[in-house]
Every structure is written in C-alpha cells, then in structure tokens.
Image 1 (cartoon, rainbow, N blue to C red):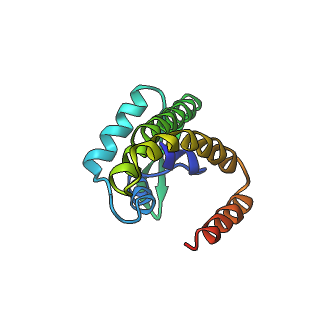
Image 2: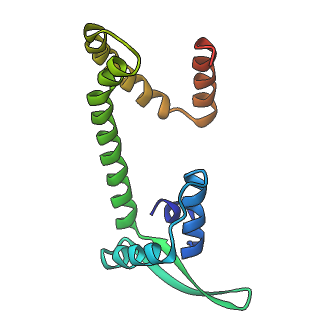
Length: 145
C-alpha cells in the first residue's frame, strides 16, 4: 500500500514490484503471484480500488489507495514503529552485552539511554528532510563514521 499511497496516478502490479525492489535495495522483488493476491485482499477490505486504463495502446489496470486504505496504512506504520521500539528496548542491552562486551550493569544502564534516544529519534524524524539529513551528518561526524 505504501507504493500506492505515493503514486498520484495509481500504480500497476509491475510498478509495485519495482517499488519493493527499490525500497529493499534490490534484495526483494515480489512476484505477480504475491502482489495480485494482496491487491485483491486489499480491494475486498476497501483499501484499494482499481481502474482500467490504456497505456501505449495496451490495457492496464491501475490501483489506487482509498481513504480507508490510507488510514489502514497509517495505523500499520504506527504499529510497526511501536513494535520496532519494543524490540529495540528488549534486545538493545542484550546486543551490547553479547556482541559489544558491555558488562551486565553497563548493558542495563544503557536501557534508560535507549529510551532517551528513542525520544530524540522521534523528534528528528518529524523534521523536514534537509534539516534531518544535516543532523544525521553531524551525528556521524561526531562518531568519526
């Protein structure tokens, strides 16, 4: 649905696959056998509508996100962000302890810092892209990354 939400003129099944390939940096390109059943499911839920059009003399079905689909997408994004935050809180200290040789006490103390970092991340992600990019570049420079 993300590909549909960004496509003002709708999207074809093929363009949705290409968008997934782009977003995953070439690691995943869904086949028609996975894209079209999802689109049918989204249609049955009222999240997507289709429109028949002609492109270069060929018949093409374009899919458009509906207002209820946009709402479902927003709810899905919020859910994923919450799950990501929970997972980060859960495994962050363990990763520091196991992978980065923190002591048990250091790893537990880092849990509080992770919570603060989450708050900073949320604020940064609300900024306009150019400002967000500048902040991230400054952070990378601080770390000599």
